[in-house]
Length: 102
Picture 1 (cartoon, one colour):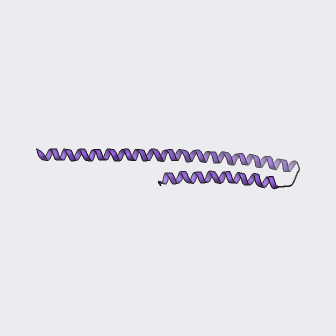
Picture 2: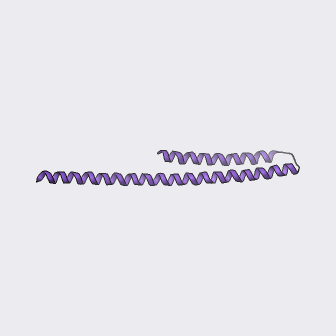
C-alpha cells in the first residue's frame, strides 16, 4: 500500500468519524426529555450541526476518492516509466552489440 492509499484510507476513516459524531449529536438530542421553546431551538441547532457533519464527511469522502484516483494514476505512470526504461536498456544493449561487431 502506498502512502497515498494510506492517506485515502485515513480520509475515509475521518469521514466515518464525522458521520458518527453527527449521529451521536442527534441521539443525545433525541433522548433529552425537556420540552420548551429553548428545547426546540436546541434540537434545531443539533440538526444543523448534523448537516454540517454530513457535509464534512462528504468532503472527506470526495478528497479520499480524489487521492485514490491520483494514487492509481501515479502507479500507472510508474509502470509506464519502467516499461520505457526496459526499452531503453534493451536498445542500448543492441547498440553496444552492433558497435562491437564493427
